[in-house]
Length: 266
Image 1 (cartoon, rainbow, N blue to C red):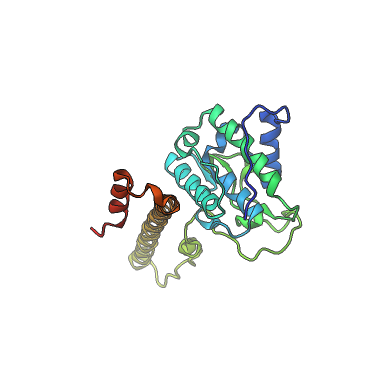
Image 2 (cartoon, rainbow, N blue to C red):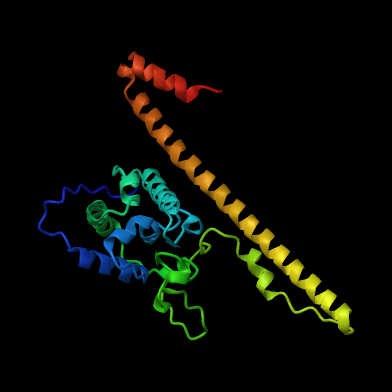
């Protein structure tokens, strides 16, 4: 069970935006440049994994993105984790996803208080937990070299306890990208026969690559649909629990109508 915290923004203990951003980057080995970039929701998801390992599926998180649709999905994953842990704080998903400074700064202030109240000091390997996926705002191709994943043999990884599981990079299926490892096709003979074999091989590789991209896209769509389903299901559970906890209000026409909609089969 998580410890709930209440924060009204009036305390003198508030950290500055620079201090808060430095804390996020230090904890996750990330390189967010502005508080507004936390609108991706990825940082909150992994910070929740630091606090409550396994409370959400990191493989569903888009760690490096500049697409609002991904922001919304990440923030819903984060909110679902809070709901499961019975945290009373409502996540202003739509406002955070717009990337405005004030909304993201105020929410980050609350989350830092929540983190401090629940953190038990255990070690955590942030890069290992997300399979060395880059963490930041944008796409891997637009990040600075220092922000890209370093998987070389000389890469240093902070010491931490062994992880029970490691999420996928961005929700895609890793083995689908094995096309790049296809060995060159041996061509016997010369002249037009050799050129024909080479052309055939190139077309097959291109075809396989296209199919892999389509499969990845479908997998992402399925995962997004599952996230949305969980998000709205949890909302319905909260509504149902509220109504059941206040039986004296069940005679109210509004509550009866809500129940009718919730329990409708068609």
